[in-house]
Image (cartoon, rainbow, N blue to C red):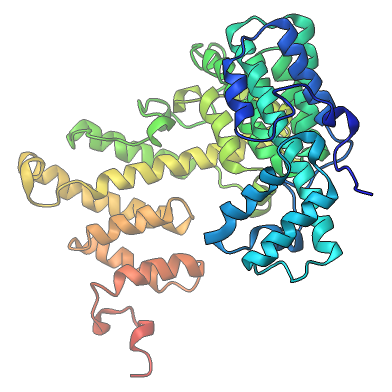
Length: 459
């Protein structure tokens, strides 16, 4: 007796939903989105929603190797046999899967033995049944999404759609389109569902994706707050940073800013201000990084405070609360620690941007160099001192050392680079970076006393 792999409700789906071939999607594209047809789509979702998490998106390594590690030349043809032998939901049976696996064996699929084992057949049967559920759910959500975008969905329809979409995310089927439907439902219904999902342990590896779409939905809230002028708010960055006109959008890049007296003075003031920002202990910084996605948290901070002048105590508190709302695991970090971590990171990004800009300035030739050579020459002296200080305190180390390398024809830069390269009190990564650039310029007899380039040792 053959064994059905799908429940009766799925086997009895009406056309075109019962069709497992490409014709189903074509037929659905031609159907008008009426209330009756949307109800039919929701019925498909109800009967396709499994009781437990499926393995289509969360396979263990053994199953992934079994199903995926096949000859690329025959993969498409092998998969085509599944719908060729089982073109409708009522025909999805274990016996027919056994036929397909037998065909795979004849085709020389390396992970299928000849003859196939019962375990191999059972595994393919389970994955094919899950795949059928997923493809039907995908088309059903896509059909309903047309109505959400056009605004023709009733409140009752929207409520059930949100519940069904959340259910599919939790079991790991049709996740992308289910989340897309929740986003199309908008605020508050879709937003509330997404907020529940980012706090749900069942979501597991889909949480970053769900959160990224939720961030997009909440972005207008952040942007509205960013347009508000700070009034009676406590600034958290030093005065030398508050006046900077550059934003996170280009990572505080100075772009084509002319190297005149004003911009160079502003650059110096910004670097000196960045050095006064409190350095956060390593344990606190690590706590903020793991396991939360730092770049996603940065997106929240960036959107609420796009310019240094907007970095205030009140807005940092809002960003901290928002990150908690979004389900980031901040591992006990309070609002004050959160503010210190991100003020330090903002200062480091500004520092990096300033040194990138300074490193690209003409150092003795070119139009800009001809205009104010004395100003640029003086710049190299104070900038070299600040670059060394930044590198020593761990702020924008790569950019600071790169600047010293770019200006190593100036004695101050060359000497600073050598000191960084051979100071045993500095972290190994800092010394190695400095040594890499120093060895391209220094000769062995120019190394600081008692030190030797690693490449020259033992010669």
